[in-house]
Length: 142
Image (cartoon, rainbow, N blue to C red; front, side, top):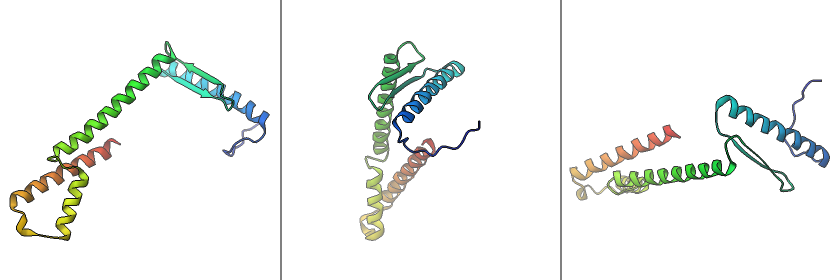
Protein backbone atom coordinates (compact mmCIF):
# COMPACT_ATOMS: atom_id res chain seq x y z
CA UNK A 1 0.00 0.00 0.00
CA UNK A 2 1.58 3.25 -1.16
CA UNK A 3 1.49 6.64 0.42
CA UNK A 4 -0.55 9.43 -1.03
CA UNK A 5 0.01 13.13 -0.74
CA UNK A 6 -2.20 14.66 1.93
CA UNK A 7 -3.74 18.07 1.58
CA UNK A 8 -2.86 20.12 4.65
CA UNK A 9 -6.24 21.03 6.07
CA UNK A 10 -8.19 20.25 9.20
CA UNK A 11 -9.63 16.75 9.32
CA UNK A 12 -13.38 17.16 9.71
CA UNK A 13 -14.26 13.68 11.03
CA UNK A 14 -13.66 13.67 14.80
CA UNK A 15 -12.64 10.02 15.09
CA UNK A 16 -10.25 10.25 12.11
CA UNK A 17 -8.79 13.44 13.55
CA UNK A 18 -8.22 11.77 16.93
CA UNK A 19 -6.57 8.71 15.35
CA UNK A 20 -4.33 10.93 13.21
CA UNK A 21 -3.41 13.05 16.25
CA UNK A 22 -2.52 9.98 18.29
CA UNK A 23 -0.37 8.44 15.56
CA UNK A 24 1.39 11.67 14.63
CA UNK A 25 1.99 12.57 18.28
CA UNK A 26 3.65 9.19 18.81
CA UNK A 27 5.75 9.69 15.68
CA UNK A 28 6.77 13.18 16.80
CA UNK A 29 7.84 11.91 20.22
CA UNK A 30 9.77 9.09 18.57
CA UNK A 31 11.60 11.56 16.32
CA UNK A 32 12.39 13.81 19.30
CA UNK A 33 13.83 10.81 21.17
CA UNK A 34 15.91 9.79 18.13
CA UNK A 35 17.22 13.34 17.71
CA UNK A 36 18.28 13.51 21.34
CA UNK A 37 20.08 10.16 21.18
CA UNK A 38 21.73 10.50 17.77
CA UNK A 39 22.84 14.10 18.11
CA UNK A 40 23.38 14.17 21.89
CA UNK A 41 21.10 17.17 22.33
CA UNK A 42 18.56 18.08 24.95
CA UNK A 43 15.02 18.04 23.57
CA UNK A 44 11.80 19.17 25.23
CA UNK A 45 8.46 18.69 23.53
CA UNK A 46 5.07 19.94 24.68
CA UNK A 47 1.85 19.08 22.87
CA UNK A 48 -1.61 20.21 23.92
CA UNK A 49 -4.54 18.36 22.40
CA UNK A 50 -7.66 20.15 21.23
CA UNK A 51 -9.26 19.10 24.52
CA UNK A 52 -6.45 20.66 26.54
CA UNK A 53 -4.61 17.48 27.52
CA UNK A 54 -0.86 17.88 27.89
CA UNK A 55 1.60 15.43 26.33
CA UNK A 56 5.26 16.00 27.04
CA UNK A 57 8.65 14.53 26.30
CA UNK A 58 11.99 15.55 27.74
CA UNK A 59 15.33 13.95 26.98
CA UNK A 60 17.10 15.67 29.89
CA UNK A 61 16.68 15.41 33.62
CA UNK A 62 13.51 17.45 33.88
CA UNK A 63 11.27 19.50 31.69
CA UNK A 64 11.41 22.32 34.21
CA UNK A 65 15.19 22.67 33.89
CA UNK A 66 14.94 22.75 30.09
CA UNK A 67 12.21 25.41 30.23
CA UNK A 68 14.26 27.51 32.67
CA UNK A 69 17.25 27.20 30.37
CA UNK A 70 15.09 28.30 27.44
CA UNK A 71 13.76 31.28 29.41
CA UNK A 72 17.28 32.34 30.41
CA UNK A 73 18.43 32.07 26.80
CA UNK A 74 15.53 34.25 25.61
CA UNK A 75 16.28 36.88 28.26
CA UNK A 76 19.98 36.96 27.33
CA UNK A 77 19.06 37.25 23.67
CA UNK A 78 16.73 40.15 24.40
CA UNK A 79 19.35 41.91 26.54
CA UNK A 80 21.97 41.57 23.81
CA UNK A 81 19.57 43.03 21.22
CA UNK A 82 18.82 45.93 23.56
CA UNK A 83 22.54 46.49 24.11
CA UNK A 84 23.13 46.43 20.34
CA UNK A 85 20.41 49.01 19.83
CA UNK A 86 21.86 51.27 22.51
CA UNK A 87 25.36 50.72 21.15
CA UNK A 88 24.36 51.81 17.67
CA UNK A 89 22.92 55.03 19.04
CA UNK A 90 25.99 55.86 21.12
CA UNK A 91 28.43 54.94 18.36
CA UNK A 92 26.72 57.37 16.00
CA UNK A 93 27.39 60.30 18.28
CA UNK A 94 24.05 59.89 20.03
CA UNK A 95 22.04 59.78 16.79
CA UNK A 96 19.87 56.84 15.83
CA UNK A 97 19.62 55.61 12.27
CA UNK A 98 16.26 57.35 11.90
CA UNK A 99 17.71 60.65 13.12
CA UNK A 100 20.59 60.38 10.67
CA UNK A 101 18.18 59.67 7.84
CA UNK A 102 16.05 62.70 8.73
CA UNK A 103 19.13 64.91 8.92
CA UNK A 104 20.35 63.81 5.48
CA UNK A 105 16.89 64.19 3.99
CA UNK A 106 16.63 67.71 5.40
CA UNK A 107 20.03 68.58 3.94
CA UNK A 108 19.05 67.27 0.51
CA UNK A 109 15.66 68.97 0.44
CA UNK A 110 16.72 72.29 1.96
CA UNK A 111 20.42 72.78 1.33
CA UNK A 112 21.66 75.55 3.54
CA UNK A 113 25.36 75.49 2.90
CA UNK A 114 26.19 78.42 5.13
CA UNK A 115 25.12 76.51 8.27
CA UNK A 116 27.54 73.62 7.71
CA UNK A 117 31.27 73.74 7.74
CA UNK A 118 33.62 71.02 6.53
CA UNK A 119 33.97 69.51 10.01
CA UNK A 120 30.21 69.03 10.30
CA UNK A 121 30.01 67.35 6.91
CA UNK A 122 32.96 65.05 7.70
CA UNK A 123 31.29 64.11 11.01
CA UNK A 124 28.02 63.40 9.21
CA UNK A 125 29.82 61.22 6.67
CA UNK A 126 31.49 59.28 9.50
CA UNK A 127 28.12 58.76 11.25
CA UNK A 128 26.53 57.53 8.02
CA UNK A 129 29.41 55.13 7.38
CA UNK A 130 29.06 53.67 10.88
CA UNK A 131 25.28 53.32 10.46
CA UNK A 132 25.74 51.64 7.08
CA UNK A 133 28.30 49.19 8.49
CA UNK A 134 26.04 48.30 11.42
CA UNK A 135 23.07 47.78 9.12
CA UNK A 136 25.10 45.50 6.85
CA UNK A 137 26.40 43.52 9.85
CA UNK A 138 22.88 43.10 11.21
CA UNK A 139 21.65 41.92 7.82
CA UNK A 140 24.48 39.39 7.51
CA UNK A 141 23.84 38.02 11.02
CA UNK A 142 20.09 37.68 10.43
